[in-house]
Length: 232
Image 1 (cartoon, helix red, strand yellow):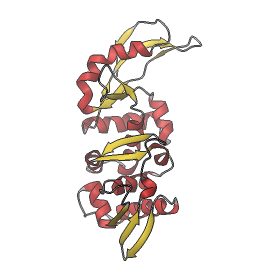
Image 2 (tube, one colour; image 1 turned 135 degrees about the horizontal axis):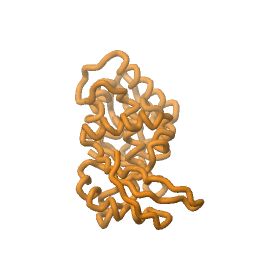
Image 3 (cartoon, one colour; image 1 turned 30 degrees about the horizontal axis):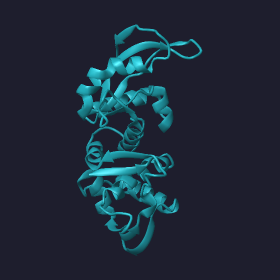
Image 4 (tube, helix red, strand yellow; image 1 turned 135 degrees about the vertical axis):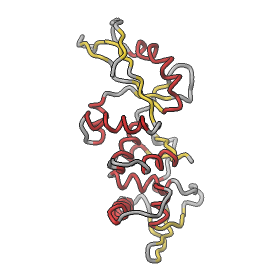
């Protein structure tokens, strides 16, 4: 199932708030009937495909849920213990007014199924990474890629480039993203030489990304510096 996220809203949310946002948007509804019934177990289930979770995980979900209430993105219509009827119209995306980031519920579950990692920040990073995949590659209108430097991606979530490389590695192993490590030496308008960042996209687009990478990089060059290399 596709999850449509308002790009401006996700920038304002903590990793926990973003996770609950994803969980709520995984529950089918629409702008005509924006009301859903849910509870804490079901929110966890939409993220993990399980209702077995630690008290700290539940605490993170409750924190993210309260964040959405405080931000007026969702409204409690009725409540019974830990079950709620919610109006989630504040999370809907008006495509004529807002930029949209699209992920899938399966991608969310893949991330929350990982071991030995901080799951909420990793999901936040993945959503931010997808939000930068806005450049059509080659002739396919369904394939979008990003070409942002690790320092830029790190600044988006308050992390170091080393953390970005670590997150990318985990997402690559899970076949959620593909990173093409081809580079061209280019220069800025001021004449400063630099090596282009990696190209990245979704794993299913890997063959097209590889086949079109060199053309893509040459089209992004500012000046006529043609050295090409395949790097790490």
